[in-house]
View (cartoon, one colour):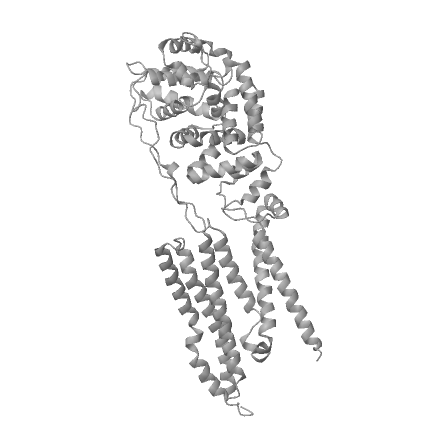
Length: 552
């Protein structure tokens, strides 16, 4: 028996709609873009063909600055850069040929005053710069050298050694004031050699002049403490290159704080600061995202300089797992992030709409012809919009979770000099990620409500096809009210079940996953009772109404 032309055309329409909807959903799923996070696929695309950590270390060696090269090379090894071993051999060869440059991390002809007076075997390893100022003779030589400087900023810094009111340091001109004097001389020498960023120079000079005028160090003492922290960990060239990228004292404070609380991440943080030439942005990212942020920087560095710049500029976390690669989509999302986000959710909306309309044509077309008022054309669009909103919420794990205070945001109290060690801080567990069991539970809740929705539609169709009076159909519809409310019952049961499973530890503790069952139930019942039941009852009521008399 041959099919009618109408049946064949409907089959073609629903098949085309189904395939188109699935294709659009695939595009929405694979497009690696998010509103408040960065997909690892985008990091890989951004870093493609850009400078690697090992290549960056090689450049520092070619500039005769083995100090920064050593830290960058350590970061390259930590991200398993394939060229790290080759650069490591170059660095070892450089150290054999230029052993005098290794302790300082480079060379500056004006460092001779610091070297004078040192005794013992010559240093052959990278040495923190403040170690050269431990004894009195190097400090006296440096003080005499700086006293002849004509720079007002240098002279203002030297005069702060006479200030008596301090909180954390012993005054420089008293017994026990050697650490403060060493930091003052180091800061003044950095100024003299133009190793401070211009904006940082202006701020430090203002603080120094204010300290001298007021007779107390005040905020400048905090800056000196930060320089002490960094000077005890970095050699001369490492410290000077870092401070050339720091724009203000707040940035120096943040970086010093990170050096205290996260010394294991110092090579990564230092490399990111030099590679992006934005110490403040790197410090802000680490302070904001804590240890997960350090791992994000490590991941970005493994892909190259472009990935690092992308992460630091956007100041967003990285989503867990890269998913399937979608190379064309990643390139487009990287160049046009706003358009990519709009395309992703527009594709999901259109895909869901086409799928729902295809199912309507395939499963409920006969009932739709009989119940014209109960199946309005806009119903699939409303349902698609609701499902798109739900998809948007669940696909943006960082959207609805407030940023928690990280362990790096806790300032360490240092009441006396020398207590700069970081307290033991447990790793952060506040990163908003979605466990696979959470996603499975959400999908199960959604499928249950879709099943309830179709059962209710089938019941309405069954009542309409019965050969009984219209008044009886109304009574049958009232009798099925409990069925039409079953979405709420299933939703509440799903929420209770999810909470019990979370308490037992069988699935990840996530209230969003549990209450999604209630949300799906509310949406299902609203669609059934407003879109279908109300419209069908209205149709039956109109059919039972007495006909108006002619001429009325």
